[in-house]
Amino acid sequence: MALPATTLTADTTRWFRRQARTAAPRVRLVCFPHAGGAASLYRDWSDGLPSGIEVLAARLPGRQDRFRETPLEHMDELADRIAEALHPLLDLPYAFFGHSLGSDVAYEVARRLERDHGSTPERIFVSGAQAPHLGEPVDVDSYDDPALIAEIQRLGAPHTELLDDPELAALLLPSLRADYRLSARYRPALAELDPVRAPITALVGDADPLVPVDDALQWSHLTTGGFNHRVYPGDHFYLERHRKALLRLVQAVLLPA
Image (cartoon, rainbow, N blue to C red; front, side, top):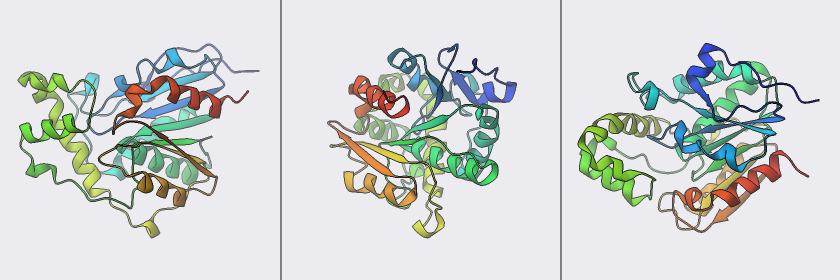
């Protein structure tokens, strides 16, 4: 029998937004946004998934309703705090979905939950992301604001027109820069990365200017639980265009017929 939806603690609600309350969820899908992104990236996902999947989106410091807080710039601190806040939600099976930098965050949180609590996600979906040991860091401090905005627009990020408003840009760019710094500092060697027990599904656009398909496939080295992948037509933000197909895949994996 499915359990009723868990009552979230104050710390958990600070870190996670329940996108729609589900009376009897069977599995939780915890979603992590891209650099500079926010929980709103996943605001409509509950509408495209059955009620058996409860969608929670990470609410990170420095954006939206936490915009007054200082963004975190070190992966260890961010992953530690997320794992602590997530612990009360481990009463149900759960899975992670991360896009771009959110994939690295999802993986690091999973490592901590396995190490500290013996708890393993049913699946980790890593989207638009190279394996953590690959790629060159971006020196975000070498970009002035117009150059940084142009780079984000080049990647096809949604709602970049908001950055044309100087007041909104002043609110949004600090968290984006902080996330780029976090990503630049998070450059582990493959030997430093412990494979997780959770199976990993890598998702990538075939024209992603940041993530060659072969680099996405290198996530296979970071799991002992099985690996598969799916390539979609599109750029770094292919998931905006292919949301319905993506959610069908998520449903098929988490609630197989």
